[in-house]
Image (cartoon, rainbow over all chains, first blue to last red; front, side, top):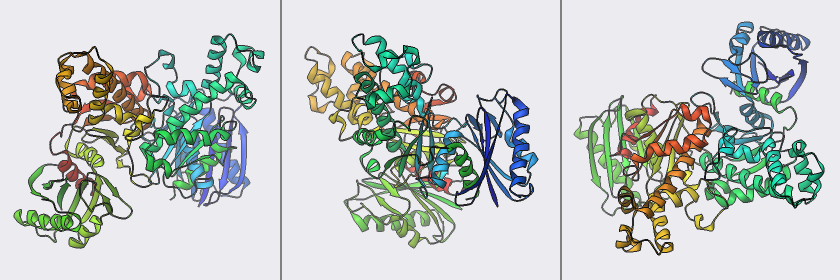
Length: 316
Length: 316
């Protein structure tokens, strides 16, 4: 059995070959270069053939293929919605792969599901049967493993935690992205900083030196590290919300581990102790004491390792 | 195959015999009458024998036995924690039933898990693969079915939604029961009414005529129906929280249905449209539009029907 992980990003396709215990033994990537729709599908197949051939693997050998899609994968139809690839709003990716490699087990999952499977098979959650991955990047989502199984839900929109209701009463300001995401995603942190910069005329710290619309979450984290008061307000608010959201997932799922990853954790990994302290106040008291909060051990190539994790998990 | 449901309450044991499609064809119950520990276990077995015999079912015939425990069932050890039965804090109920009926499939679940399985097999959620049961009584908990499976979690403390974090900043007032439960369970609604009665000296409505400590959620619902302003404040607050909590479960699980039950829904069933309207503001917008909010169709004997549902589900 050969385990293949395919990570389909907005600009490139990466493929890794994995051992059953999660070691990546070879990898390669190719640029999408403006292709759209069926041309991207054709590129996936031809590049997959190339990687197999480069590694002396016959294309009709026993394969488990895992695919990471930054979007939604419709498990009942085998189609995917990938907003970063034009023409892939209901694309029959499963059927194309299965048509090309009829003997293969093909499994396609959303990026957040891939992250948790990468963590379970190759990262810090090895051996866990119950774990939640909180991915905080431009947006916020969760990958969820319960009783050793990945959840999908009625129409595969599982783990949409950016929409968590955390701060009544409802404010129309959250219509676009949801309450939690508007305050605590990468974009949300930037938005909150813009808001506070507009409101707080007396503030003259380092974020004032950057044109308002150009302030990003990275600037906010840097200013927070320097003790900047406005950045501290933004980050304190995000810590409270991350803690409440994590507490809610702990009370609902009783996991062994909550893993924080995505572009923001990175700079926010040092905040995990503060996030746990906040969650400890709110969550079901036995469950929270049984649960560890950690940063991802696979910050680089999480999608590719995740795709490999999907391929491995499919054969368990 | 015979399907047996056993509901173990604080004062009585009820047993029902069910068809594979969820019809209850016979039932009986017996009082616990102050028994504790192993004596309750012995009563379960002897009463079970009696019900089988009364219905001309051989005790060595093929049986699927489902048991409803108002507490926690430890799926890995087969022991149960049932706080309403003295001596059952880690009681080996699975092993006793399996010892007595070695040929039987024995499945023990917590009450909230039973409620959702009752609803899936005999109630309004027939055929659903993804549904959440929000049980609001003295406390609050959720039974969760995802992708056709019941969730257990690391140590079977799944669905502890009474602890949902919904209203920052944290208040020590919630230490005992959690933020959501303190505001919106039966006991919580009474507590909020007591608090408002103490604070609002100008109020002279109907709840003032009852000694403060005797005001229950039933009084509050009755006063709300008469347009009482203090009861309205309490119920409006509970509706906002039920809506937020339901929204969070919808965003996380993408279910087809959220079912409201337990002693409080009952009087609160007429509020479900308002709860949906609140949830609609907060939740993932596609998921909430795919989801129906309904009152339980099994308000009576939910535990017994739930136990039957467990027995049926175990053979699917």
